[in-house]
Image (spheres, rainbow, N blue to C red):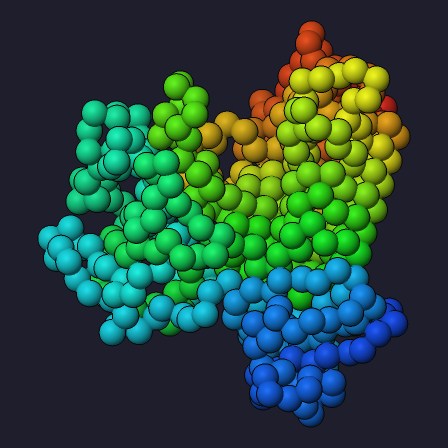
Amino acid sequence: MERLTEKYRAYLTAQQDMMRDRIRNTKTNVKFKGKAYYVSNEGNDNNDGLTPETSWLTLEKVSTTELCEGDAVFLKRGQIFRGQIICQPGVTYSAYGEGNKPEIYGWYENFAGADNWECINEEKHLWRLKKEIPDTGTLVFNEGEAHAIKLVPSYVNGKFVVRDKHDVDFDIEKEATVNLAFHQACTKELINGVPLISPACTNTGYVILRCDEGNPGAIYNSIEILPKRNTIACAGKKNITIDNLCIKYCGAHGVGSGTTEGLTVQNCEFGWIGGAIQHYNHGNPNRIGYVTRYGNGVEIYGGCKDYTVDNCYFYQVYDAAITHQTDATGRHQEMINVKYTNNLIETSTYSIEYFLSFSDIGTNKSIMKDFYIGKNFMVDAGCGWGKQRYNPETPAHIKSWNSQNPCINYVVENNVFFYSTHDLLQVGCLNKEGVPVMRNNVYIQKLGGSFGNVGVNPPQPRQVYADAREYTIKLGLGDTNAEVFYID
């Protein structure tokens, strides 16, 4: 194993930049058989939407109008749209015109402006957003110049308590110890005694933010929230194509679906995704009040067939950039023909995550088949805003959680895995059916860091570290044609 040279680093950086530029500048070239509908900031929802000159105005109109399979909806490039698209089966969603991809922001307003905030504790520098909003994953200032740190206490016996000290009441004045820390109590609606974090964004609360410089609305020109819902909600509907959209500031999933077929996400950009609260655990006595947070860039939770994510750019995703996952205990699930190709993934906790968990492994067991990960560039896993999570020891570029993960014809080839704060790869399974064919990948990790493991567990896979000899790394990862480098 050799040290990554400055020349080769410069080459890889150039490749990364070229991929980003290519994805951001991809032209619209989608095929559809039905009607075309157009949406622009100059439009009107009373229009028919059938030409750029008679375009619709809002995403709500897109979501509530009954479309037919084979139709396509085009958003105008160079413009910002706010809200959510609820997809319809067989419909393509893409872009028209010239310029940058149309941007979809998760919430309906920007909270910059001094009048949006009031000081509630001058000594502690605490400011409250005057308007109640849905649970937000974080707040992003000046398009990513800074972001807030979400304080996530447990919720036990009808009140917020310190996460690891359930006998101590949570007090924002004591817990907000760093600049831009915030807490939000969405407790208007309860179910079984715990806060309901509604997908419809009906359970709201006030954001209380520490801002040492003063009124955040006066300091920052842009303050975007990440509301807890999917920006593109597929709801398990089939044969949907998402093309050439830029999806930002979403607290759950950028594109989210249940069991489905024929989902294609291509030529898109995803940034600042996740972090909203998924649920407070009260079922497991060892994890009472434990908080799980969303979310992923593109997710299918359930079975899938013909699922493709291609030529997309992901960055600052709290959890996984791309994933297919489910717990199939007590039900049969299939994940067939899944392809993740030509994507650039930066600063996400997991670049690619997958798992298929189940307890019944009889002759009709759930299965993955024809899974391909190829020509992706994955860099800096665990280095994004998701590092504020409570389990910072988990990042990886491919993460399978040592689940059962049976998979027939699973190939991982021609990818670049460039640095992770934990493992480069963590691909474990319970039998040889889940072990991928690894070939022609590039592995780069800090000296002494973990390349991770690929193989059957237990007793393998074992951890492979960056100070091991190169043949050991290739043997441990199963990639005999690998290029392997360390960095300081």
